[in-house]
Image (cartoon, rainbow, N blue to C red; front, side, top):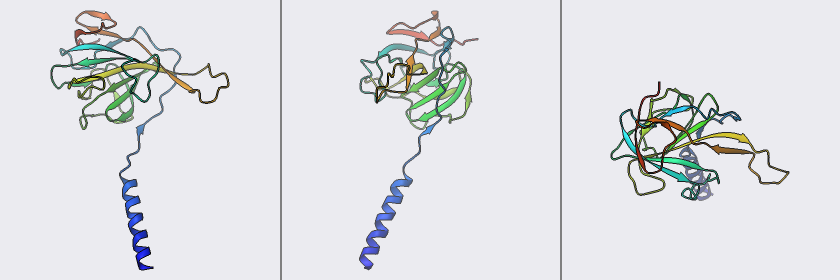
Length: 202
C-alpha cells in the first residue's frame, strides 16, 4: 500500500510539473474587417536608414507552415547583420508567440512579424505601438539559410461566405495584401530581390 501511494504521489508530481511548464498562448482574437485601407503607406519594418533585400514569399515556399493558404504572400527582409525590427504601422499588439508578433491596425488589417530573435521581443499583448517602435530583433529565416531576417505578412480577416453547408470549411479566412512601402525608391509595392532603405513615413 505504501508503495502504491508513493507511486501515486510521484505520478501527480510529474503531471503537475509538466502542467506548470505549459505556457498559455499570449493571444487576443483579431477583429474581422471587410474594408482594409489598400492605399495606406507603410514604413519598412526595420530601423530608418537600414537597408535590406526584399524577397517575395508565396504559398509555394510556405507549404511547410501550419496555417498555409493558397493566397498566402509575404516579404522576407534579409539583412547583412543583426537588426532591430520595428512596427510598420501604428496599432495594437494582439499576439506574442515566439518567434512572431501580430499587430492589428485601425482598419482591421494585421501585420505579422515572424522569425524574431528569442528573448528580444519587447512588446506584450495589449500594447499600443507607433510606427517605428522596436518590437524585436532579426533572426534565422523560416524559408532559407539566411541568419538575419524578418518575415512580414499583411492581411485582414473575413468571414467565409462560401461555406455552402459543407462541414470542415474554415469559418474565417485570412486575405493577404500587397502593402505600399516608403523607401528611397518612393512609395510602391516592393520588387523581388531588390534592396530597400527604410524611410520615415510622415
